Figure 1: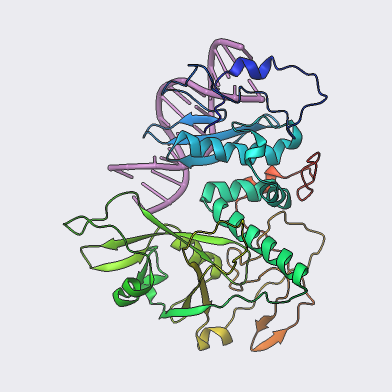
Figure 2 (figure 1 turned 120 degrees about the vertical axis):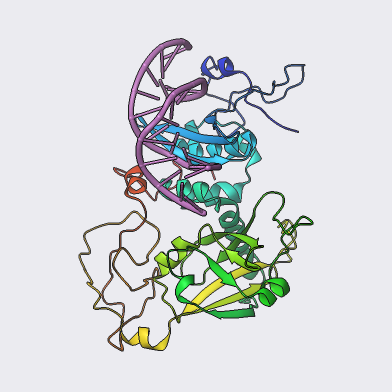
Length: 361
DNA sequence: CTTTGTGTTGAC
DNA sequence: TCAACACAAAGG
């Protein structure tokens, strides 16, 4: 059953009788489409705009500026993305496309842990769902452990395969070739037509990376001409972020969904992990990293990582930087600014990290 | 080349 | 505050 925001006027003229509403947020759209007020095809969700190519964009307005939330295949997806974003931006004042109780408590909790910029980032990258799943997994695990007094937090990761990066893997081609036998034995099947062409919606693979708490999403396809399996879209960003160089080694792991807690409706798909190790020479020739320890500067970014010319990948907390072959303890907390500046502005002036204000928990 | 998402405007 | 629309910028 779907809840559509069908009737704009019902939103603006909504009663302001603030009391006794059972819902957390003041959702005032008509929740049930009981009558024949079905939405016609050109129906639009709040914050959703059509794109020239038939896809759908989502956007919100915040302090007189538009915040672009990304493009999606369907109106529904775009509306959903808008909801996530607007809840994070407006808290209890948010007017959503779908009633707030559609989003479970863990979900709202998840949202509250993120900065505005991070939410937008994840929505635009289409990694939001995976990040949420990961959060809920962790949440459940924690719950389970505390219930049982157990500390059984490790999930079993199985090495699928490795690959030593070639120059073209890290060059401007922005693609990673995955050896055919590895792709075919470990990675999901790609639908082909009789001609070997990729068919259907493109396949995207999401990988977790051990160090940083983010998920990497790559387009995965088969190139008929070269008979190669490749990661394309998203790969360039990964290379840049990690500062990958030829000779570095990628490690691909997988693990089965680790939770057997009821209620966590995990699909049976495997979790995928991508990590890397530096090749020897490079580890020794780590550049003279211009480490600034200006601790006053604040980065609203959640990510720690290399930046621009920096060659050192800094992860969030317990970092050991290896400089000229010497391990440098994390005395120096390097402040790294990463991501697009636009994003950082979003949280500017504010409580980047504070939970949703009036969300009752 | 395709697609995103910004510039801009006018209605509410 | 919001969406419609045109189109430049971005990206593959």
